[in-house]
Length: 178
Length: 336
Image 1 (cartoon, chains in turn cyan, yellow):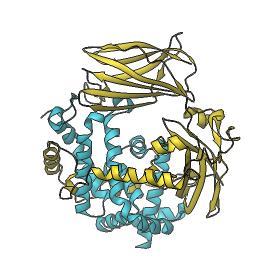
Image 2 (cartoon, chains in turn blue, brown; image 1 turned 180 degrees about the horizontal axis):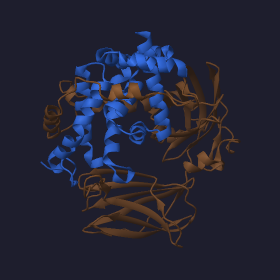
Image 3 (spheres, chains in turn blue, brown; image 1 turned 135 degrees about the vertical axis):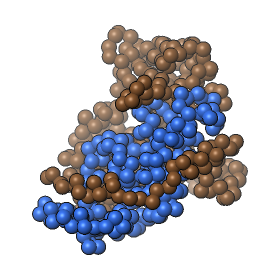
Image 4 (cartoon, helix red, strand yellow; image 1 turned 90 degrees about the horizontal axis):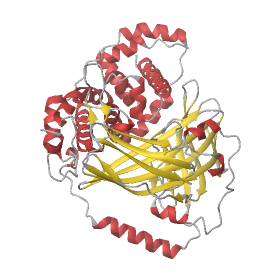
């Protein structure tokens, strides 16, 4: 099926929707699994994001950037919409986060090796929605900082700082629960 | 400080996750996308649609409310509540230049709010039919990190699609969508609220800041539209051209040719390239200006194109619209 088959307003794109989904769905699914609070929410986020993207494929504006960056902006927006209900929880975890010193980090690095995957995932899900999105884009979807920044409307440097802050919060969360 | 993030980052990269199955999800997405009237998301499939008459009723009620309450609050222009129109002193000229604003275009504001030991000062605002821009200074220096919400006197909430700032000085500029039709008629009395800021070291500080301001929309100049012409097998008709605050806005209708295509990657490792390119080239041969913002939509067989170029001085230019493999349209635009 080509792009016309999904009501793209008469625009002919040299990429098929199937190819588009094939290329991007795995990363979107992994992102959703990390950004969501539960597997069912991950299903919703991934599905809704891809559906939005497919339906808006004709509005993709190549002059603004690559199709991947365009898609991840959509994905991040869908995830944000899903996460809005958790803002109060987000504020709580933000208050719990704190700046760490280098000595503590080296000790903590050793401790991290002994944390099981389930606890690590639970800690990620204990973070606020914005931090989950940042970590899921960077480490779930494996985007570089430029792509993370584009998805969230910030510069590469700002994205880098935000990811570091999210990791700091995750460390704090892990430490609290050790 | 270099932070030893590798351990945790690597753990996250390799973390086993219960992921949705891409193939099953793709099948559902494609099936849903094939539906004739794609108005509902899959998650909302069972939810009844809102009646289309609701919006009209709501607008009518709003107009009645406006008529009965008068203009004192809702029309800042008539309430003579406008702030000084001179430019804001001390704000980063570099940041203003990046967003295509000169200090002389900014309406100075002075509202401020302090929370958690940080003061947010609304330095200025700018609005036209293209965008709404606010200038903030945060002291001690910080940048906006959390939710940012701009609301006008009619309750319209504007999203913040873009922002730029300097963490060392606390200067921050945020661009929002253009004023609603109502606000553009009366002037915009706005409230800006935020709940979090970020410091240079990366720490985030939560708080509650609300600043308020008033701004009138700059009307700008209506320019003579460039001559319409052919683009490959299709046609381009320029329908509107404006010059507001060193920003040129051009609207065009396109028929018979697709603008949304991409040129696929030719080999592994290369990236797809956009088929469409637009530049504004000075007629005297100076460096062309790339389009700052491009929005495309379509109604039936007609595509609508809105182009934005910033930091444009008066003069004669050529607008060049090219679609790879299709052709190029070059048309003259006089900015004055």
